[in-house]
Length: 279
Image (cartoon, rainbow, N blue to C red; front, top):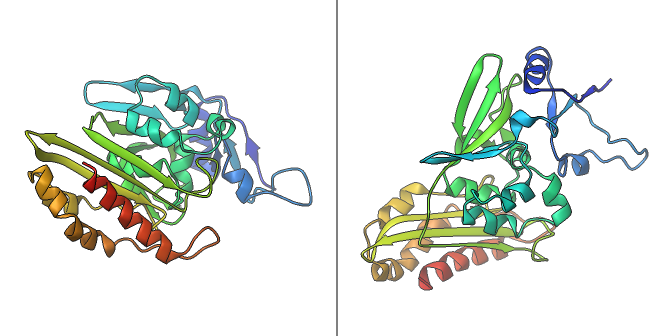
């Protein structure tokens, strides 16, 4: 029989998962769809469930001089409305889902679901997000790009829960998030793109790109970005064909019910080109 537990605090959660395997449900916007039951009303969960939406230890947004920390059960809408939230995250959330889903869906859930089409993952990869995990044994911190290992696979041990997401405080001279889908927001992305750049005296000092829904995880290649640091804006623009060629081998989308791989790859590379050419 599947257990469904509503704990009072994080300590209770850590005790439970130290003894038995559970899945976590915060907003449930993905889990309810994945486990829907056409025959009966109750959700057809196959695993033990711990509901975390009421745990204050998993909420809140705080900042210090260098970092912003977001609780794993903080809703997308509350992140959007918080004055601490970087604009690059707000611009992405504004194109995610409907207001109703944004009030339920959480940042931790978006990460834990580990879908290549997860919109919020695209800026989190770009911002070098760190996922904080907790168990009775202690706290473990993992780069998001290492935490998500494959489609819907994450480096979460049976006795751990995602508690916080930590991002660096970075302001870019220009950033642009583009979601390609059948509707502006309330639809799963066919693909998504985020570009960000900063200059000093006309030379590139920071350059980042991330792509969603074009590979098994979000595509970000810091080793390619680093090759264009200290180029002038004009040199960067003149290098756009070379840049597209380097990214081309990592843009490996699939055919599915939403789109086909040729369309996805063409549009992804065109979005990169447009971002560079419009600087």
